[in-house]
Length: 307
Image: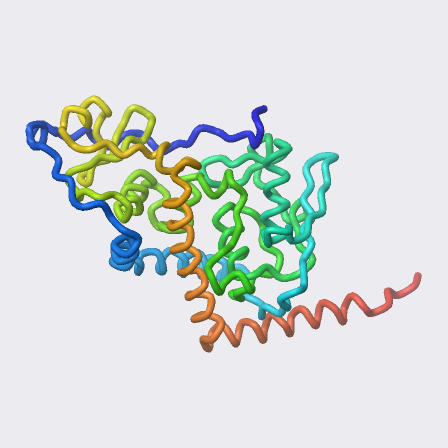
């Protein structure tokens, strides 16, 4: 298996092919190149969708687990244990401040024990990773809580807490995850995971210096996404629109834009973490979760009856 065991992405089958003849003879109109400022403004127009997506992920977690109060201090470090078959690794926060959960994920991907399939972590055999095979000895920060849910990994004690990295929205990710477009869809447009191509075109529009109907997104599978539907790549080329390649955008040579995209995502996670932690529901859940954990500790300390 190749390093990381990456599987080709599935962006679903093409929608009904639309007639692109109307735009075939119309030249694309290039607008001025976007600066960092204009990209930020463009994000701002659709930032509510990003916020809604992250809140949806958090609320999905809350249906099964109460969010604990985050109590890790700046210099504390958690340890994450990951297993697959005879392989077992224990990882703490890395020198570049990658959290223990992400360090463990990176190593399991690098060793081929786990794979990233359609934006989710699976075992090499394609199965879900169970809690007994992925655990952390402390509560997850709010960033890990969201990302672990997005990746389909089990959660121990989720929180809405911001670690020290939240101040500059810097949260190191394994490279394979960072540059995977379907991971971006799962976190930034969690309500559109069944139509990833539409979601990706919408997300990438913040970076494209053309009017919405002057470019198409080449999905790399023989199809392209227009602003009004899916077409074949042959039709897209005949349309006169500018080609934007999904593969090229999510490549290391385009790291500045990818970093900018993730910075926006992390900023939204940080903001919504703060909002929930300070809310009445957040405070109530933290209190209830703490009471539940205390009951578990007391039960564990009770001596077992002798026979």
